[in-house]
Length: 264
Ligand SMILES: C/C(=C\CNc1ncnc2c1ncn2[C@@H]1O[C@H](COP(=O)(O)O)[C@@H](O)[C@H]1O)CO
Image (cartoon, rainbow, N blue to C red):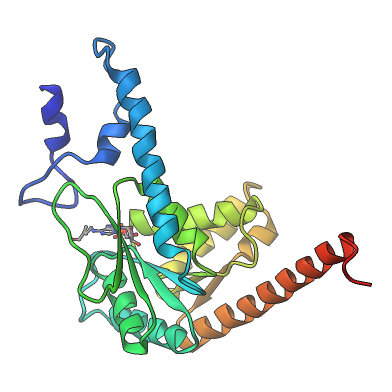
């Protein structure tokens, strides 16, 4: 297959419609040995990646407290989880949190819809896909990304919590990245809330009975996850963690002032 055609191979999530090669896909290809230009190409690509970080930081720096929603792109508005995500986002919005999503359909759309209803910033971090996809109609602040890993940084950096609705590989990837960042001390006071106990119970049981039992995680790691079916409980968990975070930040500020001799 000619190299330029490689990106146009089938896309598993899509059975019809035009597909195109994406930046992420081109970057992740190994260089062909006969391609003398690969060093130059990948080196220049770093500047594009840097530009994407800069744009993301600039767009989101002034957002204020926010919660990121993850969940299936394939959920229809008639699905009860869609309504639950709208309600959860609305409650969080009414408590002063902006809502960040991947900007796509399904649960992402529901999260943005709830933010719109509450009148808080409704952010969609859209990703370039092999087929054309604009943001869902409930996004007020769209930010476009070519690289998944840059976009994932923004989901964490600008949020105070993750709410994770039922989903597939994309959702699981986002869930486990958050858990790894917390487990390794890169992120603090960050609730990871699984919404939909019927859906997540099996995974939680497997984590407890196989992964924990086999010593691959610790008991404390299991405590990083909260499981609920209640939008109100999500709001409580997020608010109490936000209070704890504010307290810890104030304490750290005092300690640093004391260390500098400003406070007697
Ligand atoms: C497959 C479909 C749409 C794909 N469009 C997406 N747009 C934006 N973000 C997406 C998309 N698909 C996945 N994501 C990200 O992963 C999570 C959902 O993945 P899952 O595999 O569906 O669980 C989501 O939180 C996004 O960040 C339907 O036409």
